[in-house]
Image (cartoon, rainbow over all chains, first blue to last red; front, side, top):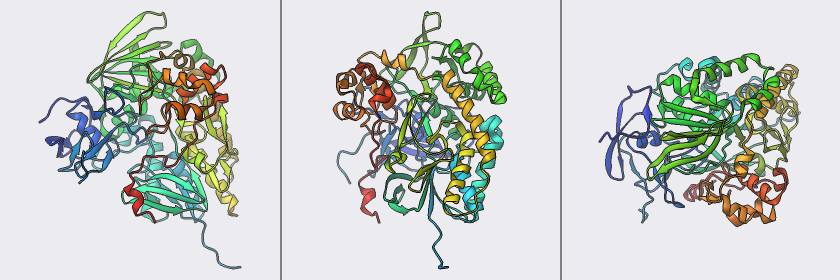
Length: 100
Length: 453
């Protein structure tokens, strides 16, 4: 469950643990993590590029570049850098094929 | 005398400029609305972590802790006392005839203003390096935000590339926090950096602080490098390929790159409200026009890095000045501006020194191979931009190649695209023009407009 990710936690490691789901798989993060931090703490990338072969992992972290789009199971798209992860959040790295 | 409603004043941005503007208006008895994309006020350079983080301002902001702390507590106090309205986590996505369309969690709402102060700040000025579309390439600002707001390094082994004060600052901050910084590669050669020295001496303490930070980087720092390519595999970055000042080829293994060449003003809203723009030769970008205190006409005022790239100290001064101009135009007694104008002149001299010492890498951009990605949003290549550069006008090239039309709306590719068009058309970048801003200035889901009122 706690895979090695791209991100290295350097400080503030004593926060409460939060569980979330990524593409149906349970993952853990810390309360106050952005979705980007949460996903990259146990993974290397956020999503695939629609225009090239390479995966993407965010770029500006200030809500301007839109490189960090991920989706919630319920449908809405979020910027992973700007949204905080919450307990039980269900995230997807791809957009839903059919809308709920 | 008939009683009139108080003027509706809206400030966009709650960084150093927006906070000082708000406080100046509150002091005069007015109640501004402050719209900001952050969850908490402070802006990017004084960005605050979410609730529950415990590092002290000293740990977060180093030598600038007192300034950051003063701004944060001032804003929090004014908000708590109900003397301003804070719309947090909200983006102004369009503006038309005195109406701002504001995207927040509940959808889009309309906020009407009589006077508008734009303190929209800046983001990293980036230049494409072959391979920069790979996972693990970030802006320098991103690396700093990750450290400050989340307490993390964005990778296990980091190379920083670019030029400018943030390159040194982010490098030193990461090293101090315990991150593995493999190299800090500055495209500005030493002789170029020395050229800015005279003007940098206008703020000797700031200049010395920069040198002290540089010293912390030790042998990691290299000036006058040539950036060849970011190597990557299917998962992301694997190495930075570069040549040192002596021309020797170097390969530095890493999983993360931070890049930036100082700042690019965030000007989309100034464009939408109809501000005139001029091409700034020093900053090699288009900037909205205002008078020396930030008046841009039609009840619009500009302050901070969104109009002149002066950094946080300059932004605080410019925020006060813009609000004072707004007050004067409303017939309020105007606080004296002369001391602030003197300070601003000194900050401006220093900023010109930075622009000279750490220039935009025009030659590097012009030499990009055809297969290098210029637009990260849609992987539009340098070759595609060149093919369509024949008309020599920025918006034609945009329509034909889609460069600048992606989801970041040209924020991270337009300066490079214009440079490529200028090279191809044999003219200067200012002759190519600039990409017109289009609403919405942030992508907005259709559903957000359904409840618009």
